[in-house]
Amino acid sequence: MKKFRGVFLKNEKEISSMRIANGMVSQILDAIAEVIKPGVSTMFLEHLAQKMCHEMNVRPSFQGYCGYPFALCCAVNETIVHGFPSEEAILQEGDIISCDMGVCYNGFHGDHARTFAVGEISEEAKKLCRVTDEALHLGIAAARVGNDLYDISAAVQRHAENNGYHVIQRFVGHGIGTSLHEKPEVPNFVPHGSISLPLQVGMVLAIEPMLAIGTHEVKILSDKWTANTLDGSLAAHFEHSIVIQQSGPEILSLSSNYSGTC
Figure 1 (cartoon, helix red, strand yellow):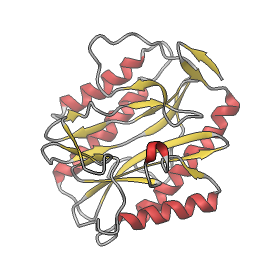
Figure 2 (cartoon, helix red, strand yellow):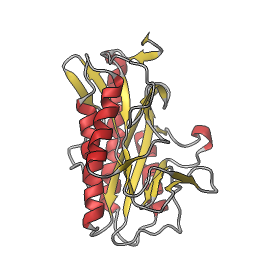
Figure 3 (cartoon, rainbow, N blue to C red):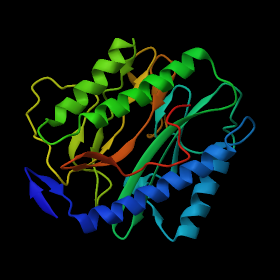
Figure 4 (cartoon, helix red, strand yellow):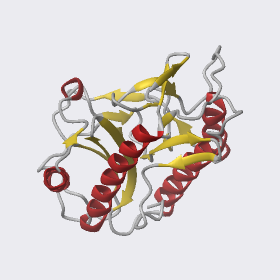
């Protein structure tokens, strides 16, 4: 690795490890997608994620990170991110659930999140999921040499706001590598007074739009982790880890079984 303005640039050997790590996360989320249905507890999803990590001989990146106790973050309906899996949290017809997960392979992390439908969901929820996923891919498309970091942010924010949704500003994307969170932060909005950061070959970024129907304001619950929309409105979250190549962005967390929207 070498540094560019405080950002670690990865070489092809390091990127190869990150492809494998992200591929594993994508496989786990594929398996979770197969079992999500009404009546399933979010702790069942956690147990499946743990089982697959054991079988793959990898460590869940989130478990123990800053004290987080689980492998999986489960965010149902108004929960934006960082929700605890629970035996008491039983999925209901019409819910949406974001599952966010990382693994560490060969010293490098993968990080990926999807929002899933539980049974048949409302048209409002479908549109929120679709627009959030579209915003993610527009952000990824802007992650090119010659662009600035905040071109990613602008692409996400513009698509969200053009569709009437609110960007959650409290949480942002990030660099990723030997640490789960590295520089630079990748906000889903253009901050006031932001300083230009040219995008370079070898940057690996976790881009993760979080959009809400009602407000960008957040309420943290008593567990100090679970983040809900302040007004209780629906939120959706999609995330890919990508590497910037000379030819354009490469998504590391792709899956042949993943259609992209709930």
